[in-house]
Image (cartoon, rainbow, N blue to C red; front, side, top):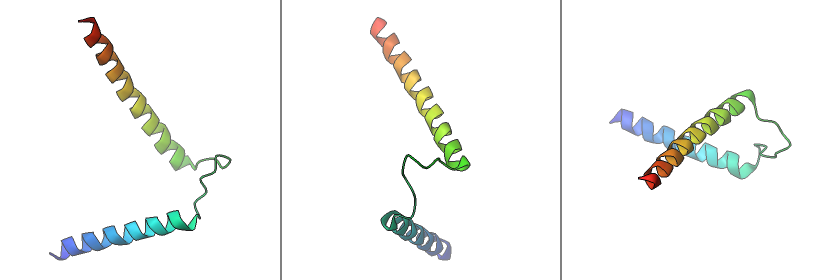
Length: 67
């Protein structure tokens, strides 16, 4: 039970912290500022996975029309 209470508390604290960062505007989201190396790596990884999934769906959709 203590574990669950700790988990819920950590989740709430994290959510409140994220909300405060979003509302405060301290994170620069302007397109003029480059991404950090970690942010760039995450975005590149996400983009590649997205393209791979979209291509697979496009190929399946194309093949199913030919049948």
